[in-house]
Image (cartoon, rainbow, N blue to C red; front, side, top):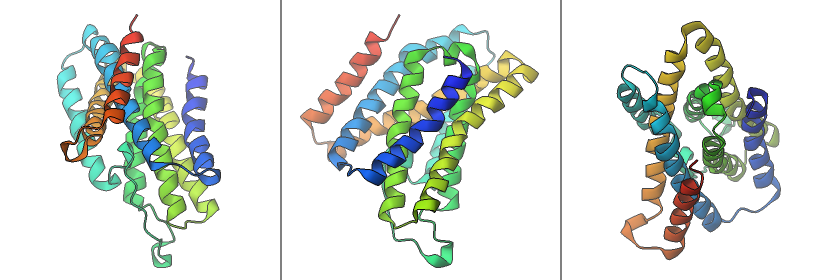
Length: 239
């Protein structure tokens, strides 16, 4: 996919999710199934598509950047409170805090996550992998739904809600533009490192989502079949 198309997709998806939450009732059970499917599909795509792509490149230490991305996501989730994997913790906003239900630290964490995720898409080889693009977009959908739901349930005003969603929406496109600029300035090594960091983050998120689909280690047939469906689709996407 061309960069303009990718930018439009990543920009519009959070806004469409926000409109859906604003005008339609979302079922928590359906969101959990969407999370299970997206997590399994993203894990499959990351392992089957992007890890081989990463290690086929003539890169110095991709494992170090992978680990750095994984640990970066661990830190980011201390501030985002797990919105990346669909956690919804809504509280009425307090005027004394500026009226925002989502703290600046949480929004900043989500912004950094999406910005970092967007950088490797400046590489045509990454942006041209339709399955990986679909996996990341599918992962961002429940993130956007969770964020929009928090804003709605907390009573945040419509204007402020859309402002927060817009900040989240522009993060990945800005990451792509950043990747283009520094990829041209620093060469392929920069984009390879960016890809490794993004893969590390996605490995953390996808595995966390799958673990969380079986709370208290109770077997749930619907969620298990949903995870299998996500993995199966990832397998079918192999060339």
